[in-house]
Amino acid sequence: MTNPHPLLTYDPAGAGLTDADRAALAGPLQAARDEVLKHDLDDYHSGSIPEKKKPLDAGFIEMPERLLADYRSDPAGSELGRILQSADRLAAAVDRVVVLGIGGSYMGARAVMEACCHPYFNELSRAERGGRPRMYFEGNNVDNDASQGLLDLLGRGTTAAGVDRRWAIVVISKSGGTMETAVALRQFLAALMQSLGDDVAALAELVVPITGNTGKLADLADAIGCTDRYLVPDGVGGRFSVLSPVGLLPAALLLGDGVVQLLEGAAAMNAHFRDAPPGSNAVLDYVGVCHHLETSKGIDLRVLSAWAKSLEAVGLWYDQLLAESLGKDGRGATPLTVVNTRDLHSRAQQHQEGAADKVFTNLIVDRWTRKPLPVGHSDWNQDELNEIAERTLPEIMTAAIDGTNTAYRTDNRPTADIRLPRLDAATLGQLLQMLMLATVVEGRLIDINPYGQPGVEQYKKHMRKNLGLE
Image (cartoon, rainbow, N blue to C red; front, top):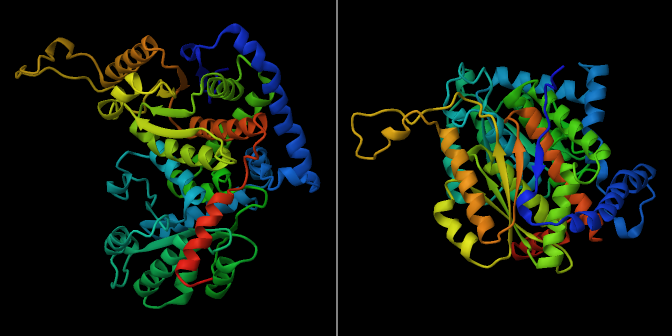
């Protein structure tokens, strides 16, 4: 029987590693995998965490299997079942949802939206969206004009009448103390309250917090009496939370039960990671190539080349994941996302003939969602394209990918390919889990704790002091 969710693949042929390089990496990579799958999880479950491993947010690893097992056992009462019910309730009640959160609290949801929804999803009619709400993201900055613009769009100062004018808030913050999200919540909560004619009971149904058991946001949710609320799970850090309620509720609002396929893809990647040996293991091979190039050749700039606009937000999500996880103790590679062929017209010159400090990982979709669009024949052939009138955009993209790889390799710029068999929820789940696993494996390989973000906490402390709050 054909696998309904074929696995993505990783091809490092253009990275320049020799058989001896790969053989030397095999042992350390397997040891790092064992550390993640055995020792980290044993310590996590026991609660007896060595000091050097604190914090240890390894709960994301097993989360896809746990959520799926609970859902299949109890479709209505399980956490995933309740998330789907909340999403369907909100989708029936409102036409817009504002997701408030910063960093990992919103970037995964944005990646899901851009990868799995129509490129102009928010511009479609409600019928064309299958009754799913439009989605907007705020609370991730303190940009005055962007916030004002979204409030204008939502119809500030007007009373919502009918589903087409109603909107809701999903707010994500474990403590409720993150300045950007807390400020946005205050502002958007006031606007939503006004749109409901100051009806607190109605407000309680249209604000869904995802937060901790205690904290400022939990207290606010109690005061409002929010009908639905979900927990940011213990043992899952923000940038590893995309497959927890943090990412699943926004995804369910957009995809409905497509979130099941998202989790199935992640579970399939877990099985692949556990069982496949180095040389045919996408996670281990990706880590091995990046680690070898950094330690042997000083290549510490990692360029993720997304060959589809819909994957740009995935790249930005990964930028944060890698930068915050491994950028510590004066170490850590620098991630950079580009979208091709767009960015070939701004970056390719530097990438091919600039400093030789980059490895290029191509993110390639093998089968596009829509039917291939041909160039087309025209009576106006001043562009001289009639010769390729029958060629399609996917064929042109393939020619560009192959041409770019050839050019880079000619100048000894290492390249590798992550190939997605198609772009859907299951494949995206595989990719997200692969990159999270790769990040923690590399952390264990180089003896850097991939969890926690002490540098970020410093900026928060100084910002609060400058505002007179400390």
